[in-house]
Length: 354
Image (tube, rainbow, N blue to C red; front, side, top):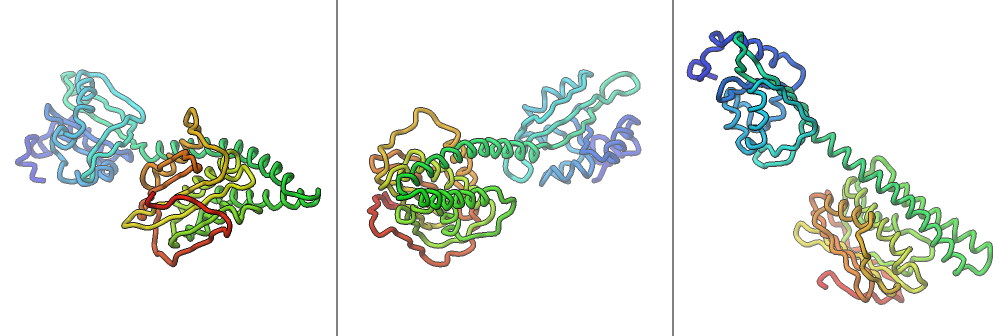
């Protein structure tokens, strides 16, 4: 920078207070910044520079209002407070900076202190900033998953109860009851193992669906069909939770809660979108719930990670769920072939164009 042409002049001519503040700023291990003068000319250290995106280095030494213009209305009130001689501190405050061409919400804990000269006049502002965006997002996701865990534990008990009741109805002897229950509980455990694994490899979508819905006695009541695609680990977790929730509801209230209902799961690729349909048929009559439960909120939150808001319908023919996921978010690498697994005796309504 050519300081001779800057309003503050050459650094050697700066006031002692500014020199000291800038030296402290540049040697700090925290992200720190100095604003000086009526125009708030700005200096910052390398730690802060890493958080500025495209604003660095072009805005070094420039007025704060010029390079934080998109959120100056958020900053100006506490700038005025500090210039009046008060300190300012806030935790996890939300701002909307434009660091790389897009305004995005970000969260910061920051402290602003006045810089006085020898006469007691506030000449500048010294600030320390810690960005907490990643931490808060992680905490929010952890809270969601903890809520899901509590919800899943409650649902697990309901599913076990449904398994016992249906096993008793289907079995012809006590030994049959025990064998069916053992098989069903083992399948349920496999689904829970998939949910709780910390890391997953990429996997075919059909294999994921089969692993979640692998329940003894339902083979002829569930069909799976669509072009084979490979999805990434984060999509595996989200889809497993969604499918597990749908399967749980089907066993408790829907097509798998009686002796004749069935489910058709089918998907298709169009452009950069994968549309996946869960269609139930011949189950008990369905009606929309009076209020949105945790399970529905969980499905909506997970679907948002994959693409668009899903379509949930309570049709006369049965419950229907439609998800439009972006291939980029699924990490789709290749389409292998079209998979078709249909039960021989079940007639399912509906299509992707319905």
